[in-house]
Image (cartoon, rainbow, N blue to C red; front, side):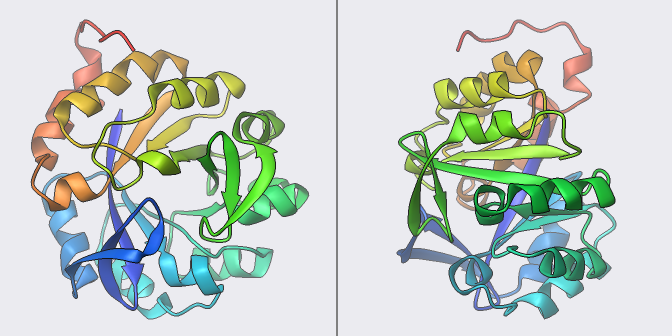
Length: 253
């Protein structure tokens, strides 16, 4: 299982929100390029970026920083936040990103997402962020009536590379992942799932291993890395791809 450090960008700085609330911001660094390099140096095999300005306003405020990160790092970088058109997705891919993540548009224009995934094989990811099981859109500000598992199921058979799933109630809380929600998402579709939200310590990461056989192939970690609750190298050793080659006893969900 891949452990993917997250950098959330707001006004060009590295921050974290609590449950997606823009009024509850913790700023960790004013140099996201240096932070990205640090995660790569510590062994990260992929980096996850969130453009919080883009998610809230739809404006490409952080593109210069995104280009700097992708040109500086040698590992693949993926980004979500405010990607609501084919033109925006393709502009971001041209910035050097390995993958772009579409959330709101996956609800509002699913055919656009399927078409992009077909044209950019392996580079289009659907982000499904849920509150009480229903998809939230536009930077988690708006609620929809769409069930998260139904949205995941609807992309079965498409060329979408992965589903990044977040239970908003756990995001930024360090209280542990919602395993029941992640299980339902993994069972809803054959597309690989990347878990996000709630990871607070190594035990939380280990708890996800029980979902690996269902298709949960990675986990995004943010605040716990910045707070020092999780050491990235230790996490990679505990649940990384090399670890899964060894016989293990999977924890019960």
